[in-house]
Image (cartoon, rainbow over all chains, first blue to last red; front, top):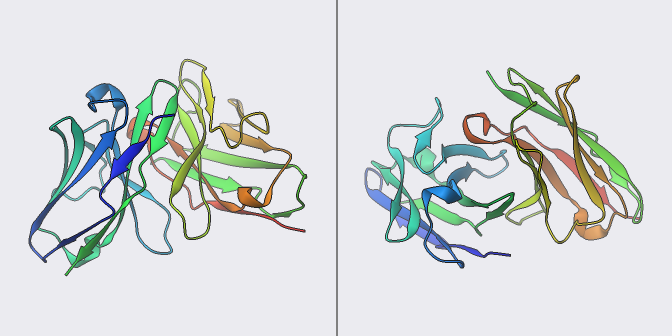
Amino acid sequence: QAVVTQEPSLTVSPGGTVTLTCGSSTGAVTSGHYPYWIQQKPGQAPRTVIYDTSDKHSWTPARFSGSLLGGKAALTLSGAQPEDEAEYYCLLSYGAARVFGGGTKVTVL
Amino acid sequence: EVHFLESGGTLAQPGGSLRLSCAASGFTLSGNGMSWVRQAPGKGLELVSNSVSSGGTYYADSVKGRFTISRDNSKNTLYLQMSSLRADDTAVYYCTGHGGASQWGQGTLVTVSS
């Protein structure tokens, strides 16, 4: 089974920009992996903020954007807000299989 | 608006069986991909089982041969039949759709303990 890798933790200043990345042990991440980014705050259910590389749900703030960057999937948070502090999980598809990364804890400080 | 409501979680004995349900509203399960995801206490998200729109299914190695994903399109409900339960199956179980239907339910807690 493929392994999906993420930074364990990142810190961003309020109003600042941070980029989270998501790599695959099988090689470059492409749009064919349909990358998702899922936000989870303590004590809450997960919530998808980005799907299919860069698509947003109606509830996804404009400051979140998804892309492919240097062979990885990337989630960029521009203009971080205190309420963006959360764990962010990447999810990649490998045919019928889907694999989560270990998550990135984003601290807004 | 798409909503998923999981149910069926409870305290179960090791070796026992349980069936989880995920009722969908504002969304038609038929022809759409769906997943069961679990989260053990203090741990990350783990894909348990996947049912893709073409009809294919996938199971994590940890549950293969013990869990079965299915759906009843007439009830617009997804199921996860769990058997030979083990202590490490203890987790909150979520269902979620794919793509534009990738909302999440609130989850249902399964505790496996004697």
